[in-house]
Image 1 (tube, rainbow, N blue to C red):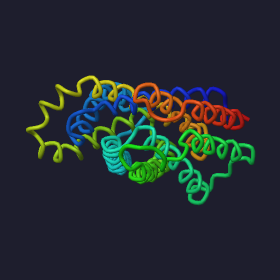
Image 2: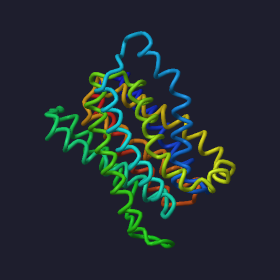
Image 3: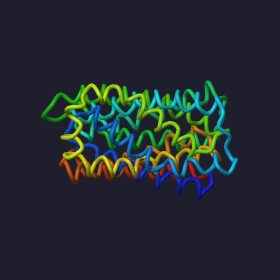
Image 4: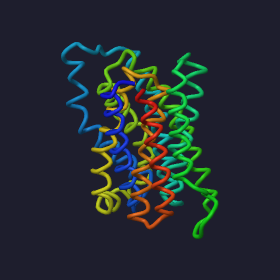
Length: 284
């Protein structure tokens, strides 16, 4: 994997950790929150996503619409599953389990279904990254408070949706401009979520007042992370991009420790070192 591509994925990982941490501060209705930041992200990205269509670099075809519609469905399930997990359990359990499960499933299916054949060193690097994720996660069944086993289950369910949309993204961006694909996905996702939000219309004003900061932050950092990863997928195999992007759990785990007083700092430092070693192997 090229150094430039690695840099892009690492910036995306940092942006991803930031918006996930911020979403933990959400106080209003979950469905309204997801709908609101999806709509805000769409409004921000439409001017950029429309450029390839205007210039003719990307044609508006039925295939573009169908591809974005499938992606919108997958991302809607992902967003609601992730946010529900955050509502009920610790960030330090749900986030690393979700991001650790995702690349394992993605790499397996990318090899089995897409025919990707990463080098032995790259596979080793990906395995080391996943091992680092496991160290940062630690023993999720230990500790007080709410039963962490539920957080593990929600994290694993989120990881399955991550694998699904990552594989679909890898297929889609091979022939579609990433910014247009992302904009179309979020536009359709906002439409898919609108009926559910309207059934909670009485909660919308309070949610918007309470969660203005988190909504706007997620609306900026989520598209940034997503578009950067889509761009990386155009020049690198999905099976390598997927585990590398999960280095976000290192920053996410530090933020969970610092902001929410979760977990063991020494273990997180060790896990971070292992993840960085895996990233070094991926760069070869």
